[in-house]
Image (tube, rainbow, N blue to C red; front, side):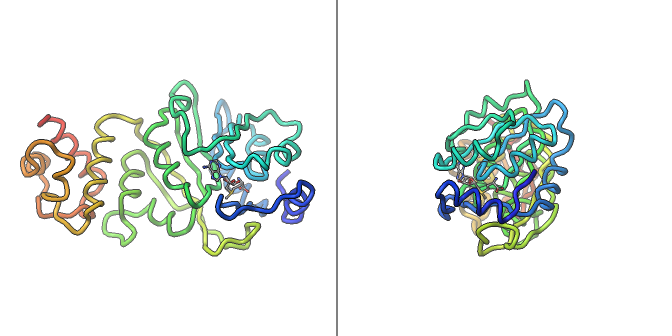
Length: 273
Ligand code: SAM
């Protein structure tokens, strides 16, 4: 059973806890939204769901009850007794650890993984991008993030939200904004709108994609400059030769290249090394 608003209030009060804003503690208090998120996670058979930020355990419970094996990370040890109560009777693997320092080899290709999380606002994007870049067994991510972040993750070239996160996501998967939600579905209410993004992974981590990420990072770090100068810090050989090798106009800027363009450039740079 998912937790209603009054049940979350009751759990917090019984354990003498108040939510910590700096940890992004906005707990999901809407069973319909939780059901929609779990449905987006796909077929639970033989799949382990990774949840970043267990909170009061409501999404964790819904995932376990749907048939996923669940591994959850939570940074706030104060929540330990509350989580034990909320997840009583379920076999779930809960670790009280900072998800910013995950051992990505654990999410290897020996097991099918999905990441399903209502991500903490402060660290959510970097955790998502790191997982896409490093966790070989990850097949899908279903994440609740700030609406603006969702728009950035799913933006295509030409959009005003297009940037490094859009390129990293597109290098490793196909992303879509599944639905938007207002602040009223959380306890306490955040000041921002949120949205759920689904990323279907289409590529495992590899050296060429990582080089493409590094090239895009250098380009967007100096986004007003042309690629022929912004890429100088990361290309040891001739920048104009690499751009020509990939058929890319050297006067373009970072935002003019899509993920395929960065991959083509990574191939050309790789040939030149
Ligand atoms: N999953 C719960 C829900 O949907 O109600 C809680 C979501 S709440 C937005 C984010 C949770 O992430 C909080 O419980 C917070 O303590 C936890 N958190 C914040 N930073 C974290 C980190 N670096 N590693 C692990 N958990 C973190």
